[in-house]
Image 1 (cartoon, one colour):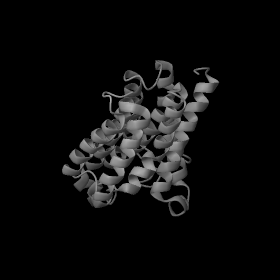
Image 2 (image 1 turned 135 degrees about the horizontal axis):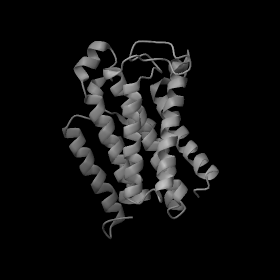
Image 3 (image 1 turned 120 degrees about the horizontal axis):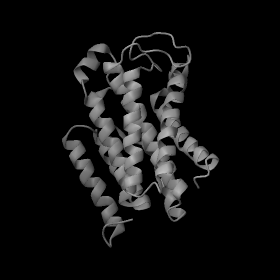
Image 4 (image 1 turned 135 degrees about the vertical axis):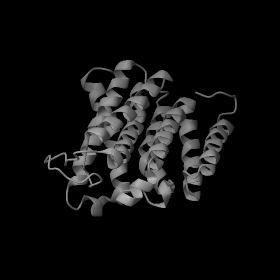
Length: 244
């Protein structure tokens, strides 16, 4: 799980270095730096370098796509506040479920289902972020998922072919990496991670399109629920398909 004989030191040093680079690039705020390093260190200690690699890929995808075309998204009124810099609340909303699953992974001595569910939470977050950022920027013919009514790109809950494709690519990348580094035990489980992420992202769009959802949950609440849904759906798929 670790690359050195000093797990705690390694678990702190690697996320700290990652955070310093992110801070220098302007992709995280001060609170995001400290919150991200703390959460990253905990994930690293519990799930080793493999788990942190999956977390790191989600962060790179999310930060890169949030900054993509930021000026244009600002003009359209769909850009993330604070120039897209992640704060501590973003870290908790998108990574809180993953942290809990990393702890389960450690306590169960690397249970394959815990590893898959962990990867699924981040694949779901990556799919949601990619779909939102790419869809709001390049989406054409955006529709509400539960009515298929045509709406403007950037409308809460709206989906488009471009955004959906971007979300699928992001989810596939996280699922594939999880398998390649050995966190996700088999290719079949990686497929469950991918499918669960797509389903959870779609359900999040349906939920986001319903009146009152934004006021009741807020964006952070939706993100937390979204990652939890992805992890649960992955477990359900794995059990139904006999991938345990």
